[in-house]
Image 1 (cartoon, rainbow, N blue to C red):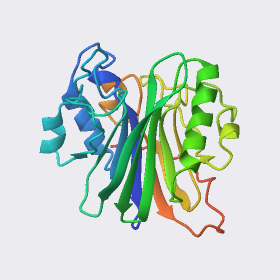
Image 2: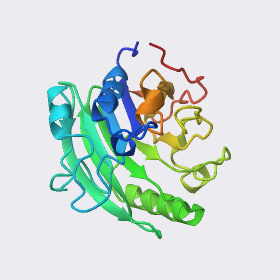
Image 3: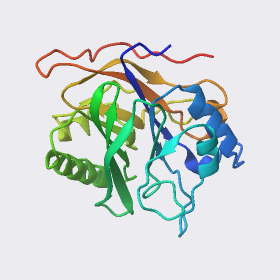
Length: 250
């Protein structure tokens, strides 16, 4: 049950809707997304790889389920460089949106969306970082510099950070962001690596956070989705960063 006066954000690498059984089944991904009861979901690998990069998760499925899709400019795509943002609920409105290329050997990108929400203005930055450690360091540094140039607003980063280390490697590169404690999300069948992460800027705290492992999440993608219930706090308050994570069971 989601606490009152909070906003649930989730991040999910849907692997182009191809499950661990090598079957492309968008309806399984929709089942997982709907069962999380999230308000905003940041997706990775939401588009097919080759140009024109059509959406792997069909628009009509999201429409029928009541999800709104942030239009990030890719004709026929769900997002940008596979990163997409969807939301659901009468209390949420999009203010601004954009996308940005990231440095590194692989083609990578980030998306940013500013919302009006039930907990106030919120900037969401979604990303899927590179496989090489040097690229990830470049990309986090680049995103931090980009973020600092934007108008001051409570901000959440969410995505597949591709970082296996349990040490705060990327955290140290963005000291103004607080990364929620890692929860294993990869591989979905037997999670070992906390590759998927959520980080919060000032003015936000996580009341609860965790990994969603209810079926069919164990097979729908190679990643499990992660989530956090957010609320606003005063800038000088001490955020509750040490809540134990909770797994959703259904």
